[in-house]
Image (cartoon, rainbow, N blue to C red; front, side, top):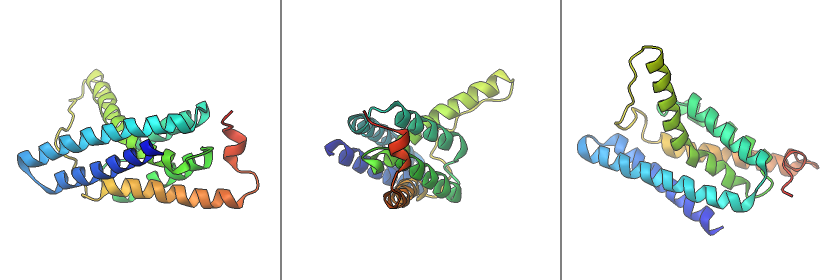
Length: 182
């Protein structure tokens, strides 16, 4: 539980730092963006450690990786509505499958988003380069609303809370059928 709280606090702090970097300009914005990125990566690591203690089920881990990959390739940091819907659905799906510490898994998807998003950008760049199309990677803060990073956390957690509520109302939850933690 200690790592879960630390990772969640780091992630929320990182979202505020990244949001501030979007509002500001110049060197301070680039510096804050770097600090926010490092904090986000650190949060992902701490949350992954916490999640490894809560479930060793390959299905839950595969679902977390798949859902994070989907949001990383589909959701652009500039699209508030898509971030709300995408992270809300991803948070709900992983909570439905996770056998315990459900909201940790929803938060983990957001934590893993930035590393996966950067990996997705690199894959796109390589693909464009191989296709003979100009390949560039943006290094400045994304042109997005400053609230989008925090909205990702809120949407995933909110989707997770809805799924948690619905799962408790069902006699046999999907996660008990699909993700035994034995």
